[in-house]
Amino acid sequence: MLIVENNPAKVEADLAAGRVTCPCCGGVLASWSFARRRHVRCDGGLLALRPRRGRCRGCTKTHVLLPDVLICRRVDTVAVIGRALVAAARGTGCRGAAVVVGRPFSTVRGWLRRARARAGVLATHFSVWAHRLDPNLGALRPAGVALADVLEAMGAAARAASLRFGPRPAWSWASALTGGTLLSNTSSPSKAH
Image (cartoon, rainbow, N blue to C red; front, side):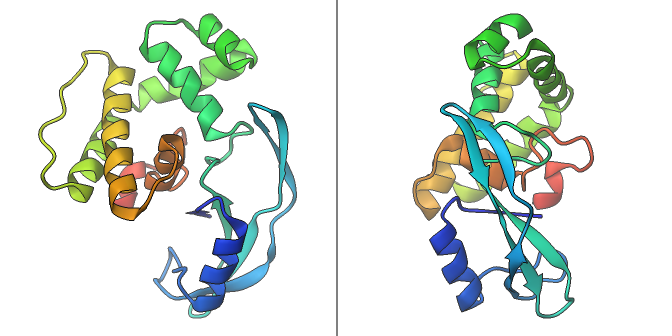
């Protein structure tokens, strides 16, 4: 799995031009059919996606090219999940955050538990990216609340990435900079450094 910009025409052009690299060996990915169709929940209802697949010309491994509006193994877009995280960082409980995003309490509780469990790793991860992308960035001030610290570091990294590479929504940068593992329990975003 590889996170790419949410622009199918650009992804196709990048694949055709050999600008997408294999996360396993660094080789060049070529077009290789599509992944299964999936439906994800967004603010406007359901979004139908059929992500592109790429195959490495070197090691021959295949990878799903997941748009940056998603993160691994989640049925909601990263922006919806992000709104729940912001609500929780501002002091809203799980039930209130579930109401804010219009999702089941148990789903939102799972997101918040995972984000809180990984808060230290995520804050460090985004802080490293922020300073790597903007070496002149000063120290980030801790907010004293774990989720707020994550959001502060993520915001700084998203601003620096947008200034360097072009604008994208902050939550798309969060997906891209973690390789889609923002709330994953199977791999660490620190592998992306």
